[in-house]
Image (spheres, rainbow, N blue to C red):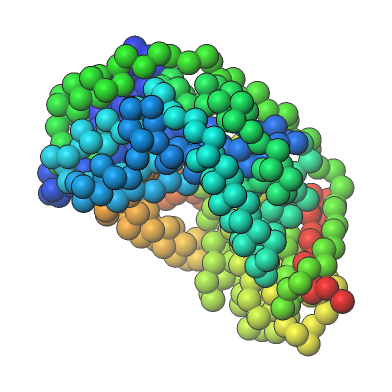
Length: 414
């Protein structure tokens, strides 16, 4: 990462990051709270995502969050992940204080209006039904996560496990969630664009400095047990065709081997020249498509392979072919140095592209500082380039093992 920044920490614990870019007339305001779906009660999931929606329903001194932003030509949005909740505003730089005014007021004193809460709860329930229950493959990844993880609270996605959980959430629970997580010492504020560090510090101290520090929010999650035997599951759904998913547990984003895992997934299953695609799509014609990917989460991740068998191949036979290739046929050969450099180059292009836009840079800074600190990611470009062939081969041997395999058949309902 080659994004310049300066840091200022307020007495209440709020971490401020400023990225100056005077080539644009705009400013980006990113506020990330270190709370996501993994912080939820397993029997009451979906509250982090519901709270994201509720944050737009006004605060004590500002009944309408969107109206002031519309007046200054701003755009805004938010998203909830398993690890954090990210709110962002992009607006003319000379109107930055409008965003700070709005964000500070809803951090200090959110309006808990019963009518607004009920509306947002209905909206989120309908979103759950639309995206998870009534869409083909809508529950594919939530089912897969729940299957792969035994204990760690990545077993569910931010949308929640089921509608009943969301229906049980009430205003007292929302208030408890707010007090516990929506406090300055559990947040990162990143300001970027046509701004100056000293001026931003003064504005942020003005609007956020008096907000009280919250209670410590400990991140004490259950350990994911080491897997010693392969697992299998078959789900029947109203789907137009079957999907085969395989997953192996892998280390978190900050593990020293993460870059090697990421590049290994590219070698195996990113693009038409990847090893899996060449062998099982083009040569043996087992699948119509196949890909590999990794999760870059704070906690334990999943190295996954997702494939669609050809209509003429049973999913059982396709799985046997894939297993045979992964566990018996495949080995790295003299192509590896060339192929590894190719995926390194592709990765470098992606990293540089992500850093081209000012608002993307501030988002990267905000998430990095939330996970740990930006400095832990500053050498990402170099770390990817330093991955060796031996490291990739070791990762494959240690991870892609049949006793660590989690295989899910996702098939059309009979």
